[in-house]
Structure formats: structure tokens, C-alpha cells
Image 1 (cartoon, rainbow, N blue to C red):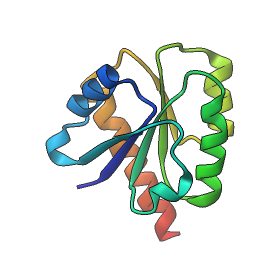
Image 2: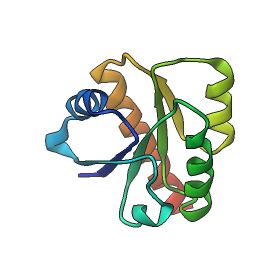
Image 3: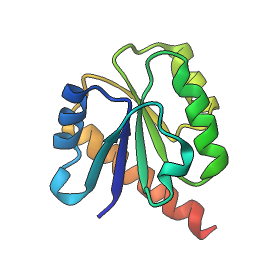
Length: 121
């Protein structure tokens, strides 16, 4: 069971993500985008709202504080430049809504596997 934190994701999207991520298999919590990197000490995976530019600073802070912590940027506005900005800031992956439950399960498995691989290295 992974502890997954949703940052700055609106309640409707957070509910959809929780359903898609199979909330019964994971501990899922939502936090505001103003959350500090120190709030992720025991977190296994982060999904962050990728709309606006403020989240990039949070991603960079998270990457410095927890280099191996996987995080996925979720946005309703798919844009190639924002996708590249997120990856350059250290995002593990990027997805746009609407999303399929199968896609979310794959993202979780992939991100957690990369985290396990990085931790073992």
C-alpha cells in the first residue's frame, strides 16, 4: 500500500483520481498547493496540479528535499511547453485530464517502480 498525496487538485478531480487509483489499495490524501516539502516525509508518490506556474517552484523544492520521491503532474490544459517545463523541474511523469483508470494505475505502478529502483541504486 502506497501513501499518495494529491496537491492542489480540485475536489472533483481528486475524487476521480482516488477512484482511478483504487483508493482501497492506497492511502490517498489531498493537500493545498501551498503545502511545504517538509509535509512529504512519509509520502510515496505525489500527484500535483499542473495548471499555472506556481507548481513548478513546488516541484523544484520537492525534488531538492526528496530527490527520489516520484511525482506526477496532472493538468486539464495539455500543452507541450508546460509538459517539458514539468519534466525539467523533475516530474516523474505528466498526464492530462480526462484520464482513464487504467492509465492512472499504470502511472502509479511505473512511478513507484522507478522510486524503488532509485532507492536501491
